[in-house]
Length: 63
Image (cartoon, rainbow, N blue to C red; front, side, top):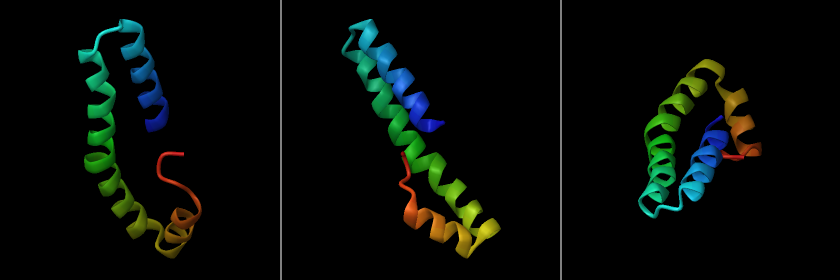
């Protein structure tokens, strides 16, 4: 979901042909990667325990 949003925002920024618009995907990535995903991962670890940790070792965060 986050990757799809990043691709959408990046495409819109490129279509706008505006250098300032290109900061939006960067800000989106930073906010999601450092403010949204870590709390979600903590909840997943508490909920699913070792199963989630094993899953996380096999699956990359953004792909």
